[in-house]
Image (cartoon, rainbow, N blue to C red; front, side):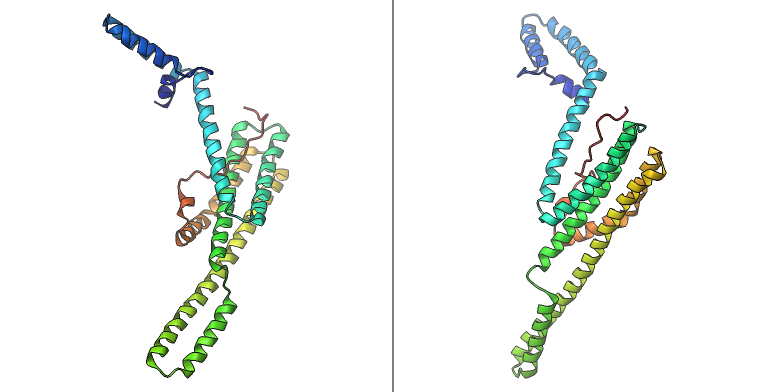
Length: 276
């Protein structure tokens, strides 16, 4: 039905109105005087839609247009996510992206890899990059929450409140200071937990970087593109728990817009000149 819809609205380059619309309008007006034309027009319209929607060339053009639109949308999504990172994290992401792209280019330079295998590798590496990006975004969100406060400053406040509590005599003041002490203690626990999360994120970021290097170096050992694709997919499978953890953290941080859809906005380019 997608091809039929595109066939119905198809128009050659330079035309403002699809010629199919013009033909239908003409048949519609002539049918008022000669109703039999409507029957003939319906048959011609069905034949036209069937012919065009089943044409391989037309389908290729429709698929190419959809692919271009998807790529443009993905690039805009990626840009919107990257602006939320500082310059150092953006550079870190782009560095890994360049390493992944290098894997595909080295495969293509070998001259024995089919385009379908390269596309499978590009999809797998794109998923790794997306996990990497979401880890960077999660870390940035945690750092924004911790900004302006430190565990040391909270410790100073706890000592100060405890000192005031020791000298307090009024019950109302004691209750206020006790409540304040409970809040500060909870804040300290949250900071400690946040620091542990940051350590985990950094470990996962380094793990993905090392996995990409391992994949790149593995090309020296094997020239089988299918084996390399399986290796990339297996690495992606090991990040399943990491993905779930990221989702939980984003829900806590209130950044659920990153969770919409399963398709990552990261799209690596398959090098031109690959075998079909």
